[in-house]
Amino acid sequence: MADTPNNPAARLLALVQAAQRLSHGQSVREVWSTVFEIDVHDTSTLLRRLASLRELPDEAAAAVRTLPGKDHEHALRWKGRIDSMVNALASNIDAQWHGAVTMLDDVTMYSLDGCARELSLSRPEPSLDPAEVVDLHRLVRELIEEVLNGALEPEMKSFLLEHLRAADEALQEYRLWGVQSVEKALAKMAGRAMSQQPVAKRAAETAEGKRFTAVLKRLAKGASEGVRTAAAVIDLYTFSVTGQLPLPIVQQLLAGPAAIEAECVEVLAESVGPGSAAGPSCSGQTRCSSGTSWGKEIVAKRISATGGKVPDESAS
Image (tube, rainbow, N blue to C red):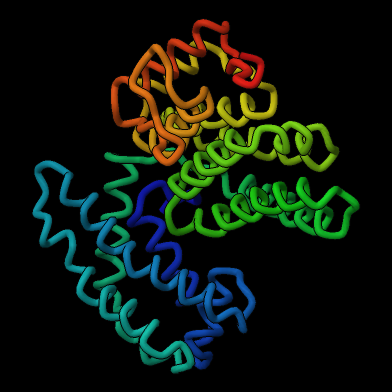
């Protein structure tokens, strides 16, 4: 397989092979803590990662079944044993890894490798360079320590730590979910930043905030090759700390993918104020829904009318 897994079968294969290379005399906890690069005593994180691992074979199988002209059941002959192995892991994380790894015979691994190769050629996903993931993860963790031990005011410290930890989680889960983990994290960060614009702007002016924005731009650049979500999200994050949003990005946003609509358009619609001539009123208890055309019209008309700026409602 290629050095950069670019589909769910390839990611599953890479994780399983990494575990196979470790001592079979170790416990499941020791082996998979090493694979996921987490502390061996961090049981809750390990169980979350193993729960995600249980979903990966189904995602890989669903991708394989979209391939035309294939005997899908024959191609997926690896799935039974992989499912059994993965299910065995979470049932007792302190059991010996040897009991589960013996399920991975040569036929299973060869079959999984074949699906990974086929998807890599037919349905490759955008992917980040592995060295870039390692470097970004290092930078994020260094920034977490700096912010924790620094002298920022509590509100800014809390804001930056929330976003840094979201980025840390996304980079940890990249090996499981690929760019999906990055895109979801960026979308959530953009939405949160836009709902906390005053503190976001102040945080962005700090040395730590500037370094984090640089990390976000690198993340989005890598994830957005062929994927619209991350590119639009990073512009939304930039908007949240500058108060400016380029109109082409507004247009892209309004026609964009559900991830952005769910996390960001709703916040945009809410941020331009409850009630508007552009559409029905929203009560203080009801968020403007990004899923309705009028909600989008509010966003488009209000931002277009101000040349890319969100109007200051307090001044009216």
